Image 1 (spheres, rainbow, N blue to C red):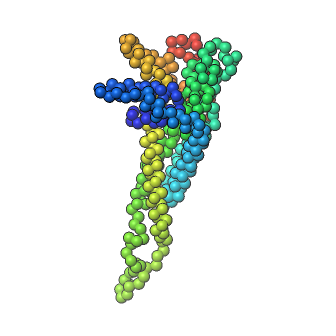
Image 2 (tube, one colour; image 1 turned 30 degrees about the horizontal axis):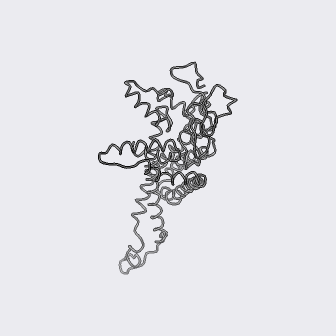
Image 3 (cartoon, rainbow, N blue to C red; image 1 turned 60 degrees about the vertical axis):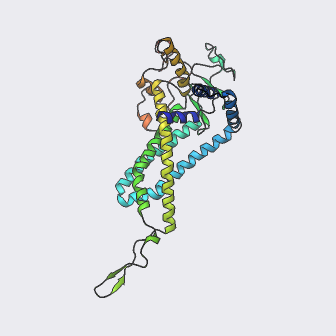
Length: 357
């Protein structure tokens, strides 16, 4: 699970040049330790990654729009199939059960659509003008804007992002301080939706695959014996045409494969991000902190993340549970902002600094 989650993190993070260099540096170091293996890794990685960088830099906006359209189409496709095949199946079993499943399924769908839409349209957070925060002296070397703590430059958006996590091509947007919660809850509710579909979709698929085609039925028509003669039985139930039945089977299997892939991918990604949130880190900080941890370990000391307030408080900060907000804001759509402004941060060892309120 940990290896898979890191692979998906790297795929989402391909647009960050700093991260790409760090990842390839570690790969070269690992493989370079193999005896009798001499490779010019600088030349090899440059040859491999330069076309990727060129494509991302020149077509990132167009590709992002395509990815966003694919997400909406995928949502419509899965929901449409659930209505077409699943609804009629459960309605024939129990109307009460069907109503309960429809209510629960639409609660998941509402959260998926809401959080994805908000992650799309919510700006991740840009640093203000230098005149507004004169106490911050750091400047970005690429865009020359003021650079508060936890701020990083996005080479795709060509600007600095407050508490940047990564640039997500499926959002065509950066994931930063103000839309990180929407991004994570979108993935979490998609995973919940995939589990829901697997649990209640399995009987539907089994039913569709178990129904025999008309070609497999005995030739002729059913009859009954009245004691002296064989008489035909009038068919009351409408039989599903073979072509329609084959289409239903194909669509059911396609949705099952799609859901399995989505569940594996996003399930690993949700677990990875949940682990980072519990530690008070972003994806970028996880990489930089890993180097700092190793350096501290070699020095015989322990690295302390200044933004880690403990798992429970880290989650409350991330979900914006302050000012009387409860967990209802997590289980139902809410547009409340995150805690803090993304510029000033409270340190565990310096409580006189700006705090979350």
